[in-house]
Image (cartoon, rainbow, N blue to C red; front, side, top):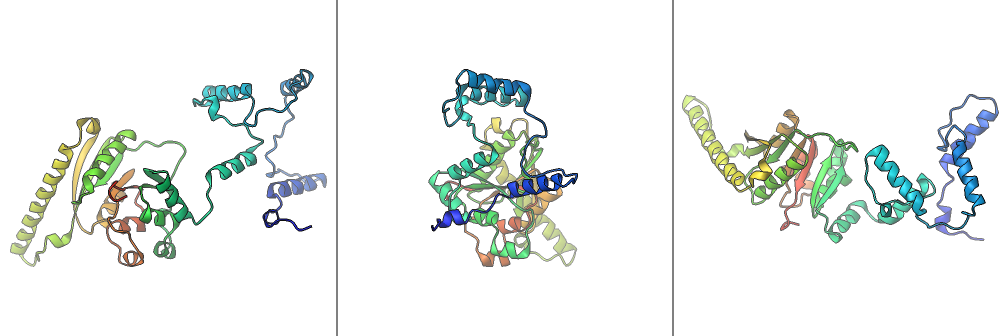
Amino acid sequence: MKFSERIQRIQPSMTLAVDAKSKELRANGEDIIGFGAGEPDFDTPDKIKKAGIAAIETNITHYTPVGGIDALKQAIVNKFERDNNLIYEKNQILVSCGAKHSLFNIAQVLWEEGEPVETINEQCKKNKVDLLLLGAMQRENMLKFYMGSIARKLTRNASCSVLLMIKPSVIRKASQHVVVNAFESPETENTVRSAFHFAQALSASKLTLVEEINRSEVAEEADDDRGLRKVTLRKEKLKRRELSRVREILNRISDSLKENIKIHSQNIFGTRGYSIGHYAKVVRADLLIMNSDEKRKGFLERIFPKDLEHILSELPTDVLIIKSKQNG
């Protein structure tokens, strides 16, 4: 009999293999601590055995609903609320036959077959996703950076906003300081407004708007005192221009979004993308928020990085890249 290719791809359970080996060693007199099957090291408690016997004697022996009986679901709901301070409804509870069964069900329901970047992007577009969350290495090796890791490929090509997390955690951590780009761009006002929304949601106490001023705008040589004065005056003029522009943006943002947040404006002369990333790292920002690049970045842009590519080369902290609706 010829078996299907699918069944031939199935490998023996590593869990059962490890468990069998530990039992074999234990039978030969070895002192073994088994890390195979997740089986308790104590017998079933008497009250559970009695409940099982009572169920048999009262003919609770027929097929049950696939997702679990109602009384069991309610007991699980009560347990989560009592012990974990988590509120669920019974229709959010599904009883299965162990962790593997649960993971298999999740995989069948949620996973899609295909190349990761294309598949995830397709699902984002199909489901009109607003924000894609990705775990990412803070710094990747040279080959992965130039060829593109999955997280960075998704970031460069996503149709929605992307949050790159270098240290994702189940436990929510307080965010004190949010840094957002404020350089001149049609997308900046939307990005700054989004930054205030996130700052409020994260209970951040400080938000810094960074205006990156390209060194080429100074365009003066400081070879002597006169040249130095001209450069200094030029820089001050550029700072005033940027400060005025940022104030106009802030004036158009509602006071409720700015409530309880200390707002700071920071001018930086340097390379766009690199300078704000370095600043976010130095001040130990909890979140850096950036405009998305207006043009998709390819291989050459990674060899000669600019703007967002500087950030992607080495993530200074968690990075949120805001994709405007019109660009999406």
